[in-house]
Image: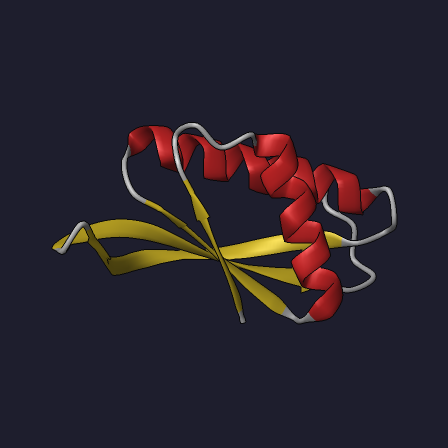
Length: 92
């Protein structure tokens, strides 16, 4: 499973492209974000990826959760979004 780390400075369009690319190689991609700004960018990217893939007759679903990550030697809690491809199903 590919893991994408998103920051508050991440470009949602580029992250969306990375999500679509990762899902073309495997059934799931994990997006990790620490902080409100990073979570905002991650959610936007997932929505953009879903819109892009819906043009191909595909849709996404995600399962949110928590993740513990070491940042500069310090343990931080962030959010994890496991994003899956719903083959052949289109979202509304």
